[in-house]
Length: 189
Image: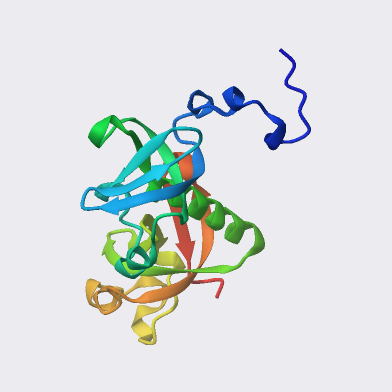
């Protein structure tokens, strides 16, 4: 069988069937309906899937209210079956993939990202970038006004406690999606 077609539109229907999808693939799907269980979507030929509530946390309430049948959304194929035996889909995983790529781009071109401070531990400050957990080592935090706090001395929890929940700009120091590792810095700013 010769699959030498100039573009996707020339492909026979079978070539684009659901079985060509791999788990984890991100695909553009069309919203069929939105109900209490989640979002039912049409992805590819004669294939419906369901995005359950726990796979659409990245959709804000405002965004959800604006969505309607016929709109397209990027979803990842999670594999397995959801309600009514539909394929399980995830908006969060599809977006997370894009966000890791965004972080990689920021690392390469030196642009900043905005992350929210979520906590701290012995080594530094914990932050959240669109649901991806990141870390800022003490040595990479912006200097504090207090003279005794330079080079990390006097950097107690109180200083970091004040920053809880703040959205701050950072540069990307290290990105490794396979290890779920994101390290940020304020020093370069």
